[in-house]
Image 1 (spheres, helix red, strand yellow):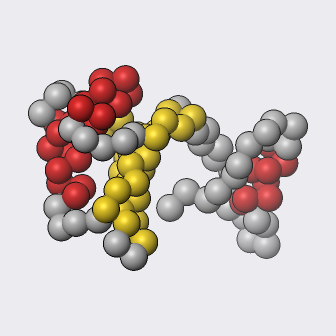
Image 2 (cartoon, one colour; image 1 turned 180 degrees about the vertical axis):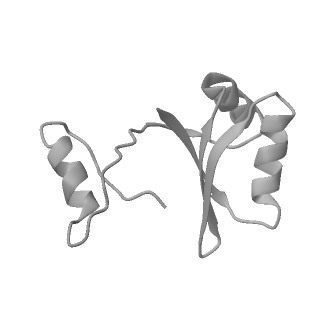
Length: 101
Protein backbone atom coordinates (compact mmCIF):
# COMPACT_ATOMS: atom_id res chain seq x y z
CA UNK A 1 0.00 0.00 0.00
CA UNK A 2 1.25 3.49 -0.73
CA UNK A 3 0.52 6.66 1.20
CA UNK A 4 1.14 10.31 0.57
CA UNK A 5 2.28 12.78 3.23
CA UNK A 6 1.96 16.54 2.91
CA UNK A 7 3.92 18.76 5.30
CA UNK A 8 3.03 22.42 4.95
CA UNK A 9 2.17 25.59 6.83
CA UNK A 10 -1.11 24.93 8.63
CA UNK A 11 -4.11 27.11 7.90
CA UNK A 12 -7.86 26.98 8.35
CA UNK A 13 -9.26 24.85 5.52
CA UNK A 14 -6.07 22.97 4.61
CA UNK A 15 -7.67 19.52 4.63
CA UNK A 16 -10.68 20.89 2.74
CA UNK A 17 -8.37 22.32 0.07
CA UNK A 18 -6.55 19.01 -0.30
CA UNK A 19 -9.82 17.08 -0.48
CA UNK A 20 -11.26 19.52 -3.01
CA UNK A 21 -8.19 19.30 -5.27
CA UNK A 22 -8.35 15.51 -5.25
CA UNK A 23 -12.13 15.28 -5.66
CA UNK A 24 -11.99 17.71 -8.58
CA UNK A 25 -9.69 15.23 -10.29
CA UNK A 26 -11.77 12.12 -9.54
CA UNK A 27 -9.50 10.82 -6.79
CA UNK A 28 -11.10 9.37 -3.66
CA UNK A 29 -9.49 9.63 -0.24
CA UNK A 30 -9.56 6.24 1.46
CA UNK A 31 -7.86 7.36 4.69
CA UNK A 32 -6.80 10.75 5.99
CA UNK A 33 -4.84 11.59 9.13
CA UNK A 34 -4.18 15.25 9.94
CA UNK A 35 -1.98 16.59 12.72
CA UNK A 36 -0.94 20.08 13.72
CA UNK A 37 2.55 20.65 15.09
CA UNK A 38 2.86 24.30 16.09
CA UNK A 39 2.11 26.09 12.79
CA UNK A 40 2.86 23.05 10.59
CA UNK A 41 0.19 20.76 9.17
CA UNK A 42 1.05 17.10 8.56
CA UNK A 43 -1.53 15.27 6.45
CA UNK A 44 -1.20 11.60 5.54
CA UNK A 45 -3.43 10.19 2.81
CA UNK A 46 -4.21 6.89 1.18
CA UNK A 47 -6.06 7.38 -2.10
CA UNK A 48 -7.54 5.21 -4.83
CA UNK A 49 -5.58 6.90 -7.66
CA UNK A 50 -2.04 7.18 -6.25
CA UNK A 51 -0.15 8.49 -9.30
CA UNK A 52 -2.95 10.89 -10.21
CA UNK A 53 -3.05 12.22 -6.63
CA UNK A 54 0.72 12.85 -6.65
CA UNK A 55 0.37 14.79 -9.90
CA UNK A 56 -2.66 16.79 -8.70
CA UNK A 57 -1.11 17.71 -5.36
CA UNK A 58 2.20 18.72 -6.92
CA UNK A 59 0.42 20.87 -9.53
CA UNK A 60 -1.63 22.50 -6.74
CA UNK A 61 1.60 23.66 -5.05
CA UNK A 62 2.06 21.04 -2.36
CA UNK A 63 5.12 18.82 -2.10
CA UNK A 64 3.75 15.29 -1.73
CA UNK A 65 6.04 12.80 -0.02
CA UNK A 66 5.69 9.25 -1.35
CA UNK A 67 5.78 6.39 1.13
CA UNK A 68 5.21 2.65 0.97
CA UNK A 69 3.18 1.30 3.85
CA UNK A 70 2.07 -2.09 5.06
CA UNK A 71 -0.90 -2.90 7.25
CA UNK A 72 -0.44 -5.81 9.62
CA UNK A 73 -3.43 -7.00 11.61
CA UNK A 74 -2.75 -8.76 14.90
CA UNK A 75 -5.11 -9.93 17.60
CA UNK A 76 -5.31 -7.58 20.57
CA UNK A 77 -5.15 -10.02 23.46
CA UNK A 78 -5.06 -9.17 27.17
CA UNK A 79 -1.49 -8.68 28.36
CA UNK A 80 -0.07 -8.77 24.83
CA UNK A 81 1.50 -5.85 23.00
CA UNK A 82 0.21 -5.75 19.40
CA UNK A 83 3.22 -3.68 18.30
CA UNK A 84 5.60 -6.39 19.58
CA UNK A 85 3.56 -8.98 17.67
CA UNK A 86 3.82 -6.92 14.48
CA UNK A 87 7.59 -6.58 14.97
CA UNK A 88 7.87 -10.35 15.34
CA UNK A 89 5.99 -10.88 12.07
CA UNK A 90 8.36 -8.66 10.09
CA UNK A 91 11.58 -8.98 12.14
CA UNK A 92 13.72 -9.91 9.13
CA UNK A 93 12.68 -6.85 7.10
CA UNK A 94 14.10 -3.32 7.31
CA UNK A 95 10.94 -1.57 8.44
CA UNK A 96 9.82 1.19 10.75
CA UNK A 97 6.78 0.12 12.76
CA UNK A 98 4.29 2.54 14.24
CA UNK A 99 0.77 2.00 15.57
CA UNK A 100 -2.11 3.16 13.38
CA UNK A 101 -3.92 6.21 14.65
